[in-house]
View 1 (cartoon, rainbow, N blue to C red):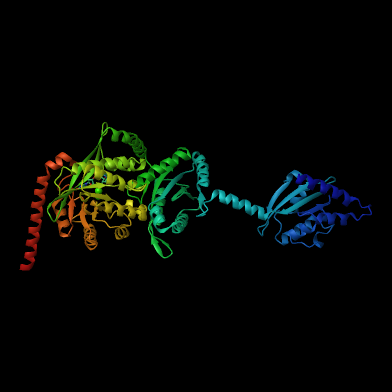
View 2: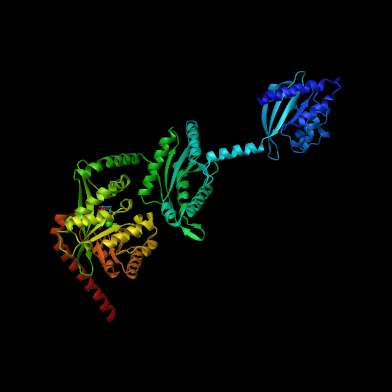
Length: 597
Ligand code: C2E
Ligand code: CA
Ligand code: CA
């Protein structure tokens, strides 16, 4: 409609302008009329001279009214505009062509001037060879459109590309793979972001995400694309990625840059990242399947200890299938009684006897045989089946402990997933009441992952549990990232140092230093310390020398079914007495020798 209006206005004006015999001063009439139009309008005769031009046109291009007065040629205007940096065409030829052959120039175009303004130009030929152009400054509209399109394709917090833009570009790049394009997809998940966000607050979390984005951005090349896929997930499309080595270099750099501390408001935060990488060099795959592959690789990176990258390979797909099989089998396993509880003795180094047994769940799968808890506990946690499994283990452990000598406690593992929905306190109280076990004989083992999830809520649950009269142990101590802050806030009764530190003893001096520090830490905090994974007499000796309260490990016994472990109880006690006696005698002699020397 608007276009039509311009056309008819221009043609009428042309009629008026060309009617030189009229007594109505047609030019003035035209000018007055044109000055009321918001766009710039300029009308040229067939010999390329201005017939009439309005103030808006002159103002738009920084010209005076004299410079666009009737009779001025198109070439003169173009020269003036070019001199003032207000002309984008190559020459007056452009406009001339537009007149002689209207199709040569588009009827409408947007011209961006050197000062950044965007001008919408519409051209309309007139009968007799002249033409009229309208010029409108649409800079503000363009900027708005740019802003809208930016918003649609960018993450507002970090200002990097969003998921939508990323998947679109991934699709486009995949479409070019057949033409020799190569790419790698790096799927990045921050390791401890949730814990930091929950404990330090969302404002700090947001700031860290921004810093992550900018670090990722400065690590990639200009041909790569980084996007925030949501929450604490980021992705990088590496193009080109000609070989695995090239992708490994990038992935390892990405892990390194996120592993460095983040500083916000003078505070230091460690976040870390796990990365899954999927590559495509020659075969065409869909974006969805590539993302799935990267996700499987990421899952593996998380399982392998985080702060690392993993590449997709076919075996991960098999693992995923097995996990999904595990999921469907696990529910049946609970009902069909395929889960059993085994017990491993924990020897008290002071009394030199078994002080407690740790309950460790076992799954006797009818087809797959014995499945390690390391393989099915994570699946149970993901599916929520850990809640009934946890209750089953707890009930069995409490019932079994009722048949043991009264001095022996039972330790039960609790996973983070059991701390949701108000936590396990009610269940534990109920099971204790039903089985009749004294709460003082129950120890609950939790890992740091329980605590860092939501420190405030966990602390409240732990206080409730302690009110019941049960003991709380920190399990796998030293493997998490917030060990010390965790310890200072939570009143643990026991501290179990992870077996990975015991493994290298007595040779590994670094492990020894950690062990020593933890023993002292436990002592100063009034916590009983337990060394896990003690397999040899030499390791036992170190645990004794460093002042640990208890040890657990294959040296005394692996986890065994309840009947077997009870049958061996006397033998284990006897072994504890004799080996600890030998160790202390050796220590005594060593001390005497020093005195003699
Ligand atoms: P954890 O709580 O650290 O349990 C100790 C693990 O170390 C057990 O593995 C045990 O068999 C193993 N172990 C004991 N002594 C030695 C040793 O001298 N050398 C070595 N190399 N390993 C030793 P298991 O039974 O396979 O359990 C693995 C993990 O599964 C447990 O680690 C625990 O985190 C989880 N888990 C087991 N049972 C349960 C359960 O009932 N509930 C929950 N939530 N988690 C459980
Ligand atoms: Ca444990
Ligand atoms: Ca442990």
